[in-house]
Length: 347
Image (tube, rainbow, N blue to C red; front, side):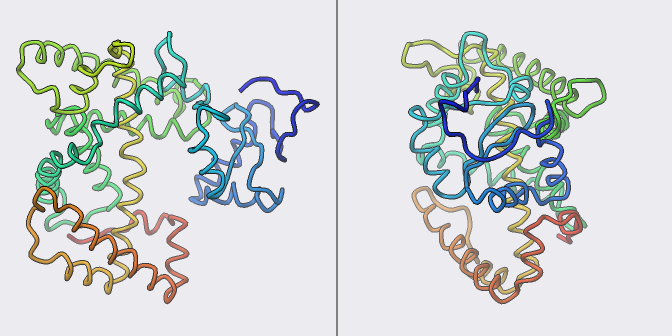
C-alpha cells in the first residue's frame, strides 16, 4: 500500500467507490446473498480485464483473477508482490511489533513445512481416525443433523487436537464459539464499535490469544521437564524450532499464529466438506461408487495413503459426468443457496 501517482504508473481499471467504505457494501451484499463471485465477474465484464482496482475494508487494492493472476502472485512473491493484509485484519490478527508482515508470513511458512511433510502427516492419520469415530458416535449416529454445523464442529475439534492437543469438549466448544466470532468479524465492515461483528471479533481474538498464552507457558514447562514430546503437536513444534538467526518465536507471535490457523485452517475446509457431502447425497451413483471402491477398508497402513486417490478419482470423475447430465440443480447449488446449506440429513 502507499501513495501512487497516476502520472508515473499505469494503474488497472476500476474505482474506489465511497469514501472510507469503498465498494465494501456491494461486496458484503454479494457475500450475504451467497454469490461473492459476482462481485468479481461483474467487474471483469465491465472493465474487460482480469485485473481491476477496488477498495475493500477501507483499503485500496487490486484483484488479479484467473490462472494467470494466481501464477503471477505465487511465482513472483517477494519480487513484484509482498504479503499484505488490510489494517482491519491486523487488528484481529496483530503482528509482533518488531516484525513486518512479510517477515512474519515467511517465518510461519517455513515453520509449517516440517509439520506438513508426508512423513509427519502419517502420524496424524491414527489421531484423525480416532477423532472422526468419536465425532460420528456423538454427533451423527441416528440423528437428523445440519451438515454445516456438525462439519464445523468436527473440523474445529480436529484442529484443536492436532494443533494444541486439546480434547476436552467444554474447552473445544468455548474456543469454537470465539473463533466463530472471529470468522464473522473478518467478513464484516471494519467498524470497531460495541455490538458490531468486527468489535466482537477483535475481543474474541484477544480472549483466545490470552487463553493460548496460558497454554504456551504451561507447554514450555512441560517441554523443559520432558513431560511431552517436541513433535506432539503444532504448539510444541513452534516452541522448539528456531529461525535462520537462531531466534525462537515470541509467545505473542505463536498465540496470534495459532488463532489464525484455527480460523483459516477450518473455515474453508468446512465449505469443501459440506459440498462433497451434498454431492454424495444428491448423486447416488457417485455415492455407491465410492462405497464400492472403499468397501472393507480398515485404517490404511503407513506408506499406502496413495490408495486414497482411488476414492478421490471416483468422486471427481463421477461428479464431472453427473454435472454435465444434471445441470440445473448443480449449478444452483454452487451458489451455496441457504436452503441447501441448512438442509437436514439423516445419519
